[in-house]
Image 1 (cartoon, rainbow, N blue to C red):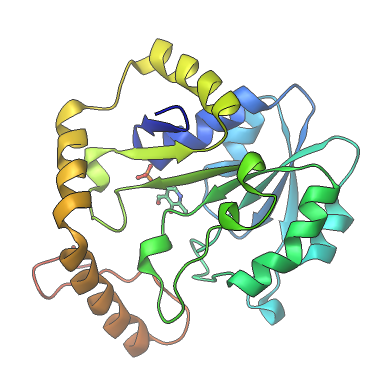
Image 2: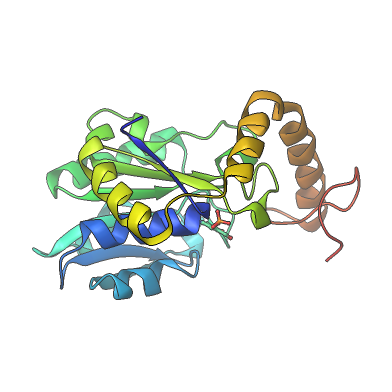
Length: 230
Ligand SMILES: Cc1ncc(COP(=O)(O)O)c(C=O)c1O
């Protein structure tokens, strides 16, 4: 109850997390390419985005050296955008383990956007929050827009240390009160009984992905009654 905030999509969770954690001038490491809202949200919260250009030759994954090179005295947060929109890149448990030491050494918080966690293929998604030393410094962002195709129902959440979630609740409560109650009821139903649908959808995405080529997890299936014909 004290470590989760239900939000209006993952978008609100990202925005509110940054607003409560940043002091003016704090630097935020922002690997790119990544989701469009991170950079403006950092700026609107008074922070300074420090862009890390992910490289094609690394399969668009983040390395410990890149974090080290981008860190200064003012660095407070790393936004960890995996599974990644738009590259489709994922970071395995072993690859995450390689960046944990530097995150702890530099005393960074991590905002880990895991909204595509359920839509990966092969190896199961690992949350960086599950690795030793990370639970107290990670805010996990997730939601129902992707795995449950509930984008317009606007429901997401942040999960993290009580001390941060407590401040996020204040901002959320006094600006929008709560996420729509009917969406919350739908989300409960999705969590209880939606696994088979997620599996079916993932399979359909996988077919598309293999048809279109390596990488993209963002292809919308048009068969089995899901999605839109793009
Ligand atoms: C990586 C990523 N994070 C967060 C979001 C926000 O999703 P929502 O606000 O619909 O939960 C999106 C939406 O496209 C996204 O691609």
